[in-house]
Length: 182
Image (tube, rainbow, N blue to C red; front, side, top):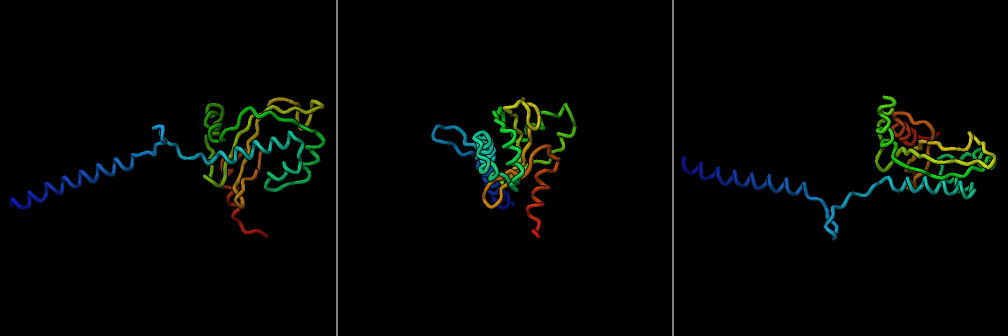
């Protein structure tokens, strides 16, 4: 009987030690040389940069470059841009999920957004001033906001859609991208 008891104490001690090591190991966070915790890279930085470059190309009246940021470039956009010649000042770009969370008290619709598909699809909310030389384009000059859906397609982020975003925007867009073509 004494032999069984002496065996269970080291086994219990070993079990506690293993659990303690696992807890410590899983709670470790990489630290940079300054001793600060390293955050994982934000995968949304590249699509945000693409959106900024898109607006820069519109402001530079580089319509061909602006079209290159669109998943489905439509030459009709050229005519619209050339006719109205808008300039933009970006006030804010944030993830649509962050924007929708802030709108919870306005409408329950914002709570229904299903989210982005990490590394593949993101919805971004842009607040901007637009100025039309004539004072009027698609709407009068002023401050507006637009939601964009960007997708990673062939190792490149492109603007897939914009305007009002449905609750399943990224999910639906990913299905259309994965569907076999004609």
